[in-house]
Length: 348
Picture 1: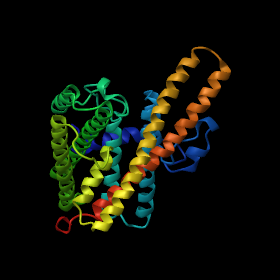
Picture 2 (picture 1 turned 180 degrees about the horizontal axis):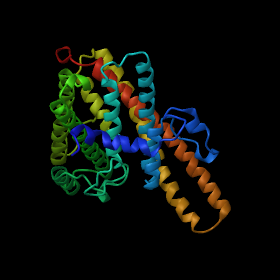
Picture 3 (picture 1 turned 90 degrees about the vertical axis):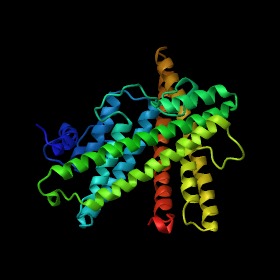
């Protein structure tokens, strides 16, 4: 019989064993430098390369691969920073390392790389036409979306914006469920070990995770009420932002202890951030078009035309990887600011 700890560690151990090579660790230069040019590692951490290579084997769409690449770049940066902290003895309780493991679990679950079977094929990303890709995996959301689509209260552009809000809400629910599963496993380990101190599982750490769960659940409930109201009444009045992630940040900021001048400054920064997101989404659409053209041209056998299409496709892919990383890093920084510096004093 596997213990709960074994069940938790087996997936990560299996992932690590896939890429073990004699004479070099996951951060070893030999692992990355002693390869042919065409096999240069995408990431400095071998475990992340294994995730990336698995996604390529599964033939993810061009946009989905680019999005995964951005997430893994953020994970890589955080893991390398943690490695420096650990070397300086600044993660004695192992909480930062545990947070990184949870973060990687979220990424793998988000892209279906965690080995769990999906009950329904999910949409690659929300930039597609929601009226043809309404996969929300939640009967309540499906009901609201169908009501909004048939209400006649929305223009095509408003329906596109509303669809992004629905998919963003679905993603928040998914992240909540992953975190809930992680916390449940941690609690199970805590209850079954003979000496909890040996595993550095502390009651205050679990308390912090429960607080995080409550915050996420509160955000989900607030978001659902917003979607319910909009679906029934339509968009009314001037909206501050169209992008759901920006709206979430703006809601957090308005409930914070920011001064009025700080709030106005933060709003201006959010406007710039929304423009950056829209630009990123524009290039995502261009990459989808380029990918379809490349497949079509490949059937013609015109080598010169194929080469030019490949060059454009590769250039767009590189641009989107770079832009995706910048967008997600900016989102991470803004979220951190409004969470740490803008919390009401009575919630600290």
